Image 1: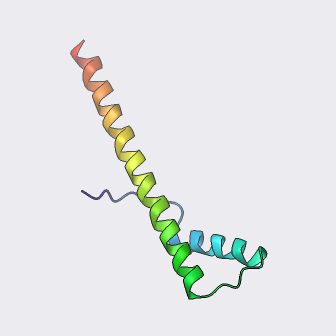
Image 2 (image 1 turned 180 degrees about the horizontal axis):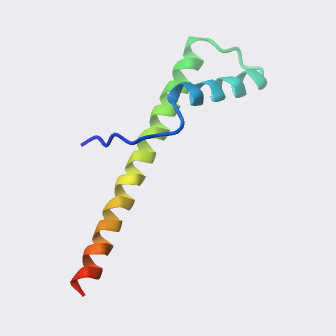
Length: 69
């Protein structure tokens, strides 16, 4: 089950940020570094989606319990 969540940040913006940091640190940015940035961003987004789904479920459970009492 994949939730489609609206986000204010786009993967392109985030990828650019990490690549800028790498450049400032003196890392030569090539295809492997760009792939790392994409993987890191995908992982971050996936974790945010999981947290969102968990908090939503907790919210629904709390509302059901409040209505049942």
